[in-house]
Length: 530
Image (cartoon, rainbow, N blue to C red):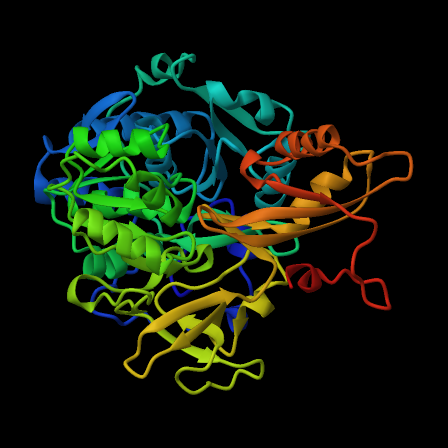
């Protein structure tokens, strides 16, 4: 951090881990070299307009189509509104919206004024939102009118809330704001976003990413693997609140001057319909969605589709083969992490080897190590260690020391490497459950179940599933006054849906008399997996 920060509110700057705890950063790659001062919003709008012109379509969304010029004007109006409301560089501003043009414009405006975007997904419940508010010390929030109930119940939020969407008057509020705005002169290493990731303990972690980081993922993974052009049309299912979606549906297309189709509902049948309607060329979604669309493909014209990116969960070889047989398109597999912002191991075109994740993306390095951090021979399983131009920086979190060791990021994945340098996924090394592209912490589901008065003890694990990769599976010990029943099972499942994001609920729930523990009483989840 050599640059002078533009942040007036220095909370984020002061909450960065000690530099000695950061991973080693590779900042001299030819694709990812940046000036001392830059603002991502300016780079994705004004600089892109210089390349493709004002009239190029930037977004197609529920609100309609927006040219780059129209998007810039909307972003500037929101930026002026933010300043009028007292937002200063370094403030944390939450966004609770679906994938649409409004949420993208708000995100760009937050960065434009030098503030920090804190994205949440509409599925998150009050208990989860309270943790985000507390960790990020959120001061402002934009909430879609359809998702206000859970937000309004957040007990520890004391800031200002702005309701947006079709059932709000937000458009009227900003209509008189000027359509011009001078972007804040942010340092390349000013924090721009807080991206939250589930911790294996159930307590979320806030990852802190700089302005330069947001451009880096476009100039490494997107440039060298996706290889987009301004004529591409992007679409996909991941929420832009997740870094996979933020990159694939916002940063990558805007960086190159392409068009992004944003879907508030991206269920596989809808996604396929929109792919065809808008002649999408670059698709981003999880293996679960690719599997779900396979049965819907016969008779469909996908000749325009040229890039299909899969991430968020392990891509089974069977899914890769089935998609290739049905479309002739080689799925681009990739592993990324919120801690590193986006994908760092992948391959495309003739470099793709089915069943393998790929090789390190240009700018990144990777190796396989054992428990003593000694590199293991090719073909032997071990922990995946990665470093590159992006890396883990947790906000005020002791788990920084676990994720970063000896200058490398340890992702929590078990991998093997071939003699040819390809990396192959084997399994997770922790209790994280990855289901349909979502990361679900077992302890978080356990805590939700324990809030029900019938539950005495509980253990949650992930079990293999052909459709979702893994499913959440709970083992519940009931209090003596309750008896197992199908009715109680459904009641507990619904209870979890009401306490935390619904996708985290246990699809399998078993009633048991006891749970496996050590002699000291520590839960042994691994014995439930055997």
